[in-house]
Each structure stands twice: as structure tokens, then as C-alpha cells.
Image 1 (cartoon, one colour):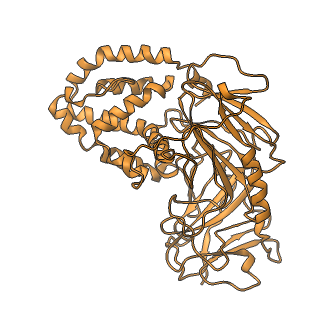
Image 2: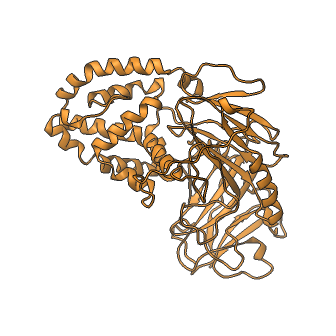
Image 3: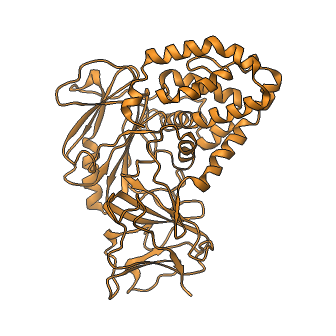
Length: 473
């Protein structure tokens, strides 16, 4: 979806659409059959899943008075200072390649100004996501280089003048998530260098730009569930609560122009952006038909996993992320399994659960991933292979090594090829540089390709194939 298209759906247009649908929805809803209502409700559920998940994620991640751990109040920068240890259990599929610098902001009232310092040629990526999980912009080494940069993130319908030297990025929604990543080797010296860069990053309201600014302390909402996972919280919503929440969120996070057919479907059920959804106005048979929609619709979302991407030698991945248009099912699935996904030009994340023979990985066996000479992952940024246990967490090991990448100074074979060893046992000093320690039980490897090449050979166009992982006989 082009950002320009989303920009054109201003507040005024949203109100016009709402008024038009409001005039007909009561009559339409009274005539709808229970079967048709259920089908429409499932479509609307899938359509709204990203916006509701983003809002709940924002609520949980910002429900603190000051930055701490993996949370920070609205308008505060959260600077993650080190990679998680094997004991970390707050987020699945943790990363040991880049340190995060993130922020949740509300650009509905005024723009916010993001300042990025000189990265000195270091790889960094600062994707900016709207409320529907689209990556509206992705400043960083690939797109804008590594020099100092300043951007103003403006909200829907904002009209105004920006200071000289500040580039405008328009968000179609008031809700915005900055999800910055900075490459770091993890050594004490490199941690210090990245920390210095993180400290120089700032994000402030436009009214405070160029002035001394301290973000206000956050207000803790005791009504937000801080223990249950966001996915479980979303799935626990009743149909009535889900659709009412969606309608209210769409007031400040309007849909795109191309979403108009979906708005018409919503109106058939009496769901109108910015208006309270009252399920009791529907026919009792329709209300009954909607009762199990959260379960059935989420089932459809997860079932899409089988057709959402590609499979290469047992590796599953997708290059359809970051920008979705009207691919609502794809957007909902990526939200469910990989919220905050980048555009494929910035990162691709293949995962494998079975070896070349189609059998699950276990530490009881030894495995080899073989790269022929000149066929290492083709990237302009960097690549890594990460080891997870069956629950997608890091694996404790004597080397405290959770990933393998070029920074491990991988040893080549005599013919220039490279073998990576995935096993529980240390393969010995001659192979240790290429060893990715595995748990004694089941495990899952994940390959990360940052800034993958777009010309052949490329994982994006399918001209580069990921090698299969072989069990050693």
C-alpha cells in the first residue's frame, strides 16, 4: 500500500463515510441473516486484529511511570542496553544482533520530532509503524544512510509548518510505534559505542523541539492486565467488546481509502468508526451467531500460516510483510506471530522446525548446515543463525552463545565451503568457532537476513535457496 494513498483519507473523509454508513446500518443490520452476519463478523475480526493488538500492546508496554526493563511510558524512549540472557522469558524469539531503541507516541494532537545522530556507518534501522502495523517509513543505513537525520512524524490531517531541516513523515493514524534497531557485537567496547549512540537519539513533541524537554512521568493504569500475554488478552475479548473497541479505535486511527468495502461490511452489523457498538440492537439469532466469532476467526488467521509464505529445504518464511494493502489475512497473521515485522527489504526471518528428512530437531542428534563456496546468505547488512528451544527462548550453554554469524570468524573448509554445527555437544576446538549450541531436547533454528540483497542471488526473489539442515549419520 502506498503511504500517499493512506494520507488521502483525512479526518473529514472519515466523518463523511461514518455518517453515510450510520444512516443505513440500522436497517441493513435488521435484515441480515445469522449465517451472513457470522461470515461478515469473521472478516471484520480479521480486518481489525492488527489495530486492536497494537493498542493492547501499546497499553502493556507503556503502563509504567518511567522506563524500566522492556517498558517505557508513552512519549519516552526505551533504550535496551544489552542482549537478554538465557533466563529471559518476557518476549519470544529474542534477538542477539541488534539493541532496540523504541517509543510509542500519539501524533493525533501534534507531530513528534525524531532526531537520529551520526551512526558512523554502523548498521541501524528505525522503522515507524502506524496503528495498522504498516511500516510507513524505515529510516536507516539502507534507505537514508548513517549521517545525522531529523524527522517530524505528523498525524492524520495535520497541516502546519516544520522547522528548517526537519523532514516530514506522515502517519495515517494517531498511534505510532518507533521500533529502532542498532547492530552490536555484544562486546563491552561495542556496547559502550552503541549506548553512546542510543543516548544521542531523541524524540520530542514539535512544540518542544529546540527546547529543553523532559517527558512527563507515565500514569499507571491498574486496569491493564500485565501478566497475561497480549495475544491471550485479545483472544479473550467477546465479540461485542472486540467490535466496540475496534469502532472506537478507528476514530483516531482511520482506515485507508481502499478499506471502504470493509467499512460497508462493518456497517451491515452496525459497526461504525467512532461510534459505540451496541450488539443488543441486533436480532437475537445474529447475536448468537456472533458469539463464537473470536475463536473461529482466529482459527482462520492461524490456518493461513500454511499459505502465507514459502518453504525452502524445510525453512519457512515470508517476504510479504511491512506493507499489506487489503491483504487482511496476511496482516493479521503477521500480527499474531511477528508483531512489528519489517519490510522484506530490511529483514527476512526464515525458521525451520524439521531437518532435511522432515523430522523435528533434537539435541540427541547432531546436525550440519552446509554452505557451498560463495553461497553464504546474500546480504548488504548482516546475517545470523539463532538457536531457540521449543518455546522460542535462548538456550543456556557454556559459551553463552545464542547466535552464529560472520562476527564469529567462521572457519572455512579446504574448498572454501562453510559448515555450521547445530548440536548439544561441543564438536571440539577445531570446529568450535562454527558451533551453535543446542539444548538436550527439542530446538528451533532461525535465520535472520538484515538488508537482504535484491539482485540475484536473493532470498526476496527466490534466486537464493537456504541450505537444508542435515542430521549427521
